Length: 299
Length: 299
Image 1 (cartoon, rainbow over the protein chains, first blue to last red):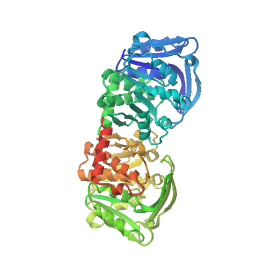
Image 2 (cartoon, rainbow over the protein chains, first blue to last red; image 1 turned 90 degrees about the vertical axis):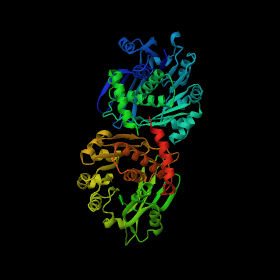
Image 3 (cartoon, rainbow over the protein chains, first blue to last red; image 1 turned 180 degrees about the vertical axis):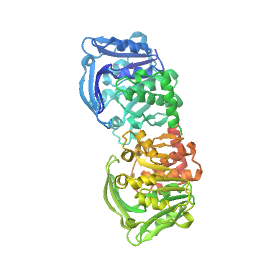
Image 4 (tube, rainbow over the protein chains, first blue to last red; image 1 turned 45 degrees about the horizontal axis):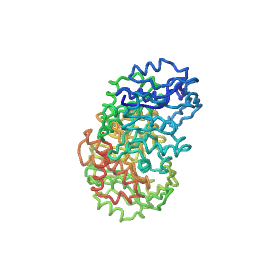
């Protein structure tokens, strides 16, 4: 297996101004796996409770996701509830029940320790580091994080950053981590902390990639209707890493195409609740929207 | 003369969290003219008071701006005062002294009525229409507007929209004019009102161009430090229209390049107060940043 993701499997309850879902499939690793599996086999490391539907794991396996690294622990699956306001930018967390996640100790099965491409979805930097140290010689490691860890676990996060190749973060997180209000300066400062590549997610406004040999800005795909933004960032990361793992090189042109694929998989994600839209997409859908996006952004 | 702009010449007083300027040269037509003059001669139609410094008009003429259409009226020049908050998105108008603008009746000199490219900077739709009807057979007319006119002069604005080829507006204005919250749907609705092309300005997040044969999204040029955003939209329009007028065609490729040039001239505008930065730029500066931007956005 060349691509590995460490992250969450969850049941989310989501309210928007238009509709709601209770206990829908969610979790960073689920969104990532569904998006990346269009391009390459992917191994998933995570934990669920006894209540987690076996059908979800079966569905993932059918997509080419190796689920041997998903531990089934005593207790309930991680649950998150949130509400989005009409502008989509304001998200209120209604509850976070960590449940089995509270004692999550990631274990990478022996046969997956040779992974070349690794995505460490948002988790405490300690958990991320524990997972990473089990991978023998990864070629390209990208981590996600959030304001909470920048705030309460900065030292652990800084230690992790010295071991990863790329960091995905949104503008607020970039400013918080770097202390710089200008986004480009912030991204350069983050690169000085370790990661050679910084991906700035700007939601509906697209994403930036900054690296030694590449400097790329991309708008979001203009979806006609956003239904539920949950999982957009992880779906982006899935398309990005999945394409890179399949291309097996890190040339500027490949990285830019990977940004486009990530934008495409994120756009399908936000078109439906939970995995309702992205889970129904084929590789053909992905290629079709990729071509459309390429046309939309090519000068 | 193939490019004509109808707009304001002003003295602006601007406060930012870092610095301030009193009675600095401003106005939509000034920013537009400085930006477009890199590419093509441009004629300026506007009004100033007796207090307006002749040196400003001399400076514009030296750039290739025809100022014969600038009326010098009894009274004082239009004055605007505003303050920007730290995020640059919150702008408070401190005062608006219309002065000579109050009775502005645009007169296009005979020798400029053959203009092929026309930009109607933000003004009441009645004033915009009065100027436009003096141009004999324009080939490509773009108008700007603002929330005020959408609110208080909607019918006049709708009448104007049936006579223009393009409309420049920001996301709030697009939503207000169309009643659609989704920006892409909003732009399509605006096109149904008349203009074949809609340019959505998203400030630091770039711009969209939507037309029959072109559909293009472009991020903003990532300036290292924003000093004063006043005039950014008009500077964008100047680069856009100036390049189009010089290219003399409206092919998709040309329109996309024009969007890049507009992004470049806007980026110089916001790097300094008033015209301090953009006014000091050469065509070489513009080409250099154009190449950099092209590299930044090319997939």
